[in-house]
Image (tube, rainbow, N blue to C red; front, top):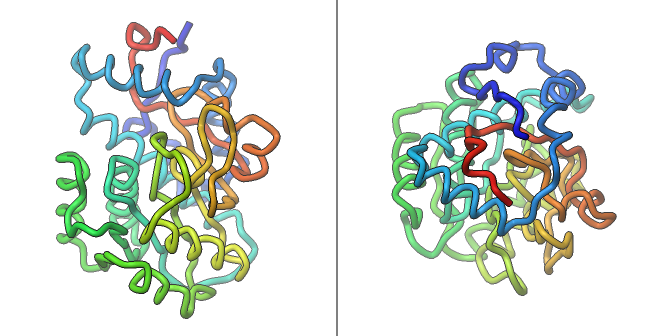
Length: 262
């Protein structure tokens, strides 16, 4: 049975400027207590939700809003002082779309972001992700960067210690095999950030941890915090998964009970 959900965009608690990770974890604890699911089950629930009339754009909006709340909570919970901006690393798919939404909501809350589209193409692959990438152009506090090559991406290692937070929105559930350029170099930036003491927040899963098995690819992001959606993922609660995911938060995004049959 899926408990009644309070969606992130309707949840006034997420707007508290003093929100920290302990408070957010307790707030979302009922979703974290749900039965774990595999990556394939989550993809199926997502597809069925859209067939039952929930637009994919709405699911992305809820996910990104939840990530923005987790990002603010992370910034409020770290002892390290920083006046730097949030670096958002976004892949070309819907995981990147979630990251674009998160950047938009962070910008609306006064947090400056550098948003990097890590892709050979200068536009995201999906219509929903493209729309949210384009929407960022309206914000003066958001710097959009297209990084089509590994060399372009690695330039961001220079001065990475000044970043306030790095958000990993590179790859979600569809990861298999060794990562290719330029995504692999973006993972290197996440690794460099962690080494410099900059917190890393992963969207859905640390790139490139398998959400079903918990097996990492090479290279792999080591996150301080991971925000996954709807239900916990089996791969994130394995021994290896927990080590890579860090603190795990589970946020609702509006998948109806009738769509969640796995």
